Image (cartoon, rainbow, N blue to C red):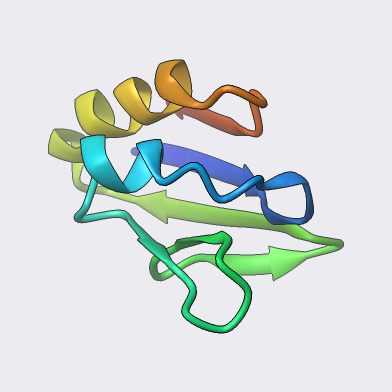
Length: 76
């Protein structure tokens, strides 16, 4: 299982996560911040738990590309 977390309130809208992992991230037209697709929100932490291990590499690349370090991804 892959767990990906996004601290959306700290997003600066650079779009790097969307470029490297377009299947998991989109930019909001409303506020210009990143959206983690199919995630649940709790206290402004958006978390995606997916049994699809094939998304890990892309999410890991998004984590590395994020200049404000608000994305975490791990295999559990």
